[in-house]
Length: 67
Image (cartoon, rainbow, N blue to C red; front, side):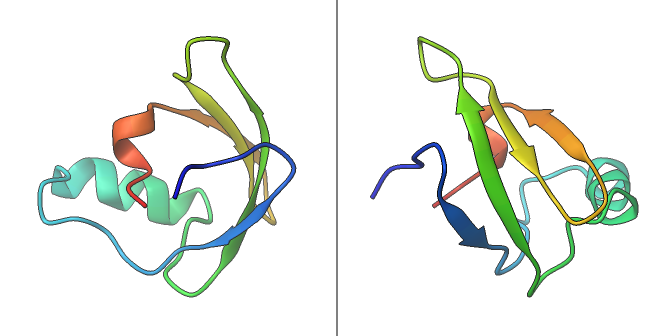
């Protein structure tokens, strides 16, 4: 499965590999387990990816969005 633009995805949790400070930052930006985000667009080479949560738009590296 790959991440596609104009699709909605559910956040199921965070990998143990993510730095705790970075995880806290994502949580404070509205990326909570159980919530959803929409993929707005993906860069031509597939990285980074722009997503939209309930609260804001974010641009994240593909490795952060495991699927």
